[in-house]
Image (tube, rainbow, N blue to C red; front, side, top):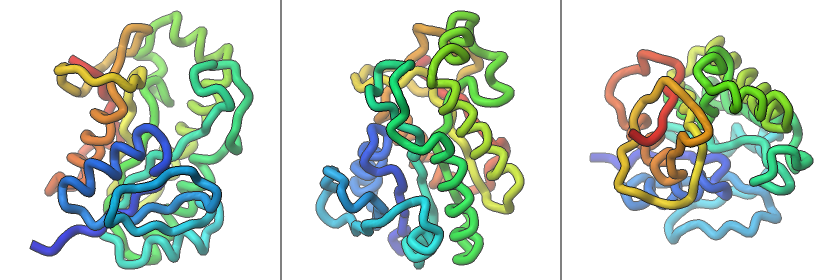
Length: 220
């Protein structure tokens, strides 16, 4: 079987690093697009392209000869664990990068894309607890959610076979809990970054087109 070529965007982040590591272990030929000043060092064998995800030509060049794309891009805050921390990324990072991704995938006729979004984005806001709603509305998490909602709308209006994965609260630690589709998000809801990355890779490998544009996931 011919090895699949997979472009991973946002590879330096928590979910992105796991996506790269797991994809390499599963036999994908992985390419990452990262910033020139990134401190991230990918595993051996990964092709590294340095550039700006917000530059359309850079993204188009990175897409060349790829079979599928995973995006773990999202707004970063200066202090990640502080919901009120100032943004360290443009407030429309996911929106603008997704425009470039869709255009580049269309140009190269690449069909499959899996992206990270978040539980509570768009219509799923009604599936989160009251405390979570207050936290999101009153902090800079709201900017991330607005950006992801705009990203998902771009994907819905494209011809790309795409899936937006909406994880509940992300944690670093691993457990023996199983990642599943969930229908509610509260303060205790968790899933590991590794499990999100594995879910995204499993989605890339599904034989049929996605039957839903989004999936909210958490630990069972």
